[in-house]
Amino acid sequence: MGQLERLLLMAEDELTQYSTDARKMEKLRQKIALSVSRAEQQQIKETLLAEMPTGGLAKLVETQRQAVALPLWGIAGLGLLLGISFMQPVDFLATIVGGAGAIAVQKWGWSLQAKRLLINTLEELEQRMKGG
Image (cartoon, rainbow, N blue to C red):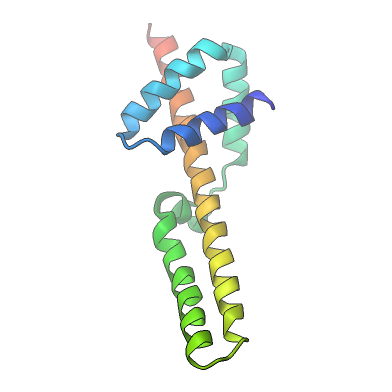
């Protein structure tokens, strides 16, 4: 596992904690400062910035992944309801497609949010190094 993957896992781990973004960044900053050299930090930051999508949908999914996935969960639930109510096995296809789509959107948003947290933390580290 490379440094980038390890740092992304650490960022995802911080996302699971119920705390402010500043606290998450502080905890992540301490871990990064102890385990990653300055040159590697810069390289990882550049890689992340190049990987981050800039489109409107990606920004929306990054900040509001649950709201974007909600209609897909609705389609999944409606397919399940109609499949059971009308004994139509084809309606269960909507359940599968809607559920899979919602899960994919959630994963994508989680990944984008972890990358953004890592980028912000690396930028904060860089500012601290320059400032003193």
